[in-house]
Image 1 (spheres, one colour):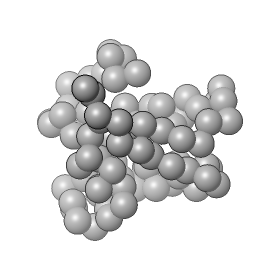
Image 2: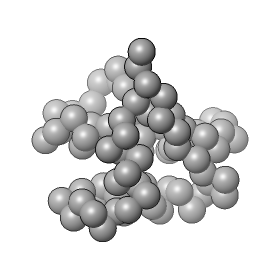
Image 3: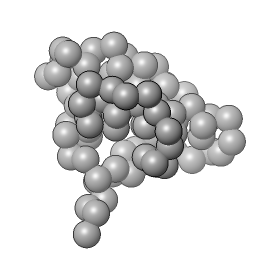
Image 4: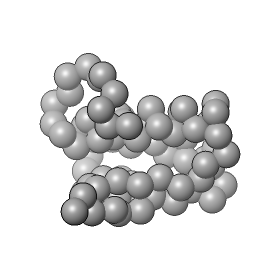
Length: 81
């Protein structure tokens, strides 16, 4: 899903947050999926502790709001290799 055409963002981490937001919104409309996967450990750490990265506060607030729609939300690390 990360190959989706998105506007240019500041960093790759911003892009990964945007992709996660898009995936969560899509799953709300089209699936009962509760589990998401990423190859980015930093993304998982940011979601676990949003205050650790204040520069991402706006993006993380949206993710936190979306998480409330997924009672069994889980995000897992899947290495690329």
